[in-house]
Length: 323
Length: 231
Image 1: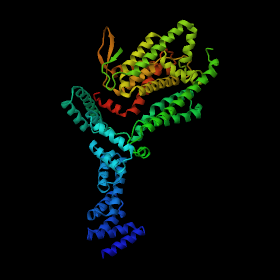
Image 2 (image 1 turned 90 degrees about the vertical axis):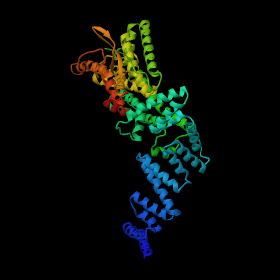
Image 3 (image 1 turned 120 degrees about the vertical axis):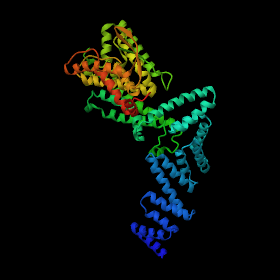
Image 4 (image 1 turned 30 degrees about the vertical axis):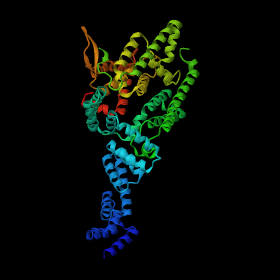
């Protein structure tokens, strides 16, 4: 009986009638909650990610070796993890990826993602070691691993690392340990850093809405672009009608140059950024090359603008009132 | 009321190199100006000021040195008192602003404040043929930024009230004292065509321009300001 209903649900699904299929499958699992394939198929008919996850988890509970269920669950968990990360819910994203890794331990990409979301340095190192095991030729992974080992072996650096990660409590704990156990020089450094940390905590304890990464990037591009914009506006005699289109276009080059200069010195947790430059950000030679291009892009328009101003001065000098 | 120095030390860097460099450049340029005056005479010196100072009407008519003059005018001064008070102001307020943002960002910020000050001054008196020189617009910008970044900051200030005394007073008091001194003459320049040798509009432009820039760049600062959190 349930086999017939299962076939009927399958037919509904093939014809695109998801709701009918879902109703039949729900009936099946209500009668026989150990129907593995019904749970699997039910996950396809569900629209809510949480319901899909429950259906797939149930299918895997019944048969932990079901390859289709494993594959779908990993894909779904990765997708949910990415979504959560995109919306700034790092802890949730971490939990999703951790579960995905329970079912799929042979994906380098998953381990790299997980390393990025790891709360502790030990977890991050383990994740990168796994990624390296799967792809020993990945130089970026090796570099990151070496860097993390260096940090883990130096208490001050380790505390700084946690501060940067936003885990002030753990950083403060390490600084306090240094103050109690280490040499005089390190004690002083740790004391200073602990004071700065406490002050920072006091400030960030305020209900401040964090800025979106895009907005942060805009702020970082702001300086040279504003400077150029002001110069351009003054050059046009404060009249937008006299703005030279070529110089305006050069302004866009300043923005691009600033973007490159800023981008090569940071690894923002922005999905687009990670997609373009990878989980580890840019490698040193490429970083230097892009920074140089960025610098030229910023400097060149300023030179063009100043040259235009100088040419105008030479052309109009004789007509100035004091001549 | 003369601000003397900020009593708080730097937090992130030991020195504020860019502030010192800007002060040195201003002093060197002033020394050169004096040399030029002695060697080439008053008429040539006047032409130098007219060329490299910012003249609103020439800016509007797109004549003369244009942006070059808006750049150079920031580093030129008219007399020893002018440069002394401007550089003192830069040292008092600029040192810790640089500490907060780093030397190169500080340089761009300083120049932007100067340009905003020029822009406002030109808009306030577009027909004026009087050249303006001095770093005061940018220095007022530093004052605005200081106020936003260090709202509880205290400045050792010389006050001469029958007898001189030098208490540590909150920076906001200095601003509350200085702002009306700029606002009233600025109003007269704009609405009563009053003549003045002081760029009041440039001061106001630099001050409010810097507040807007800092507000955009460091939204945290405004929260700190209103909540009076310790610095």
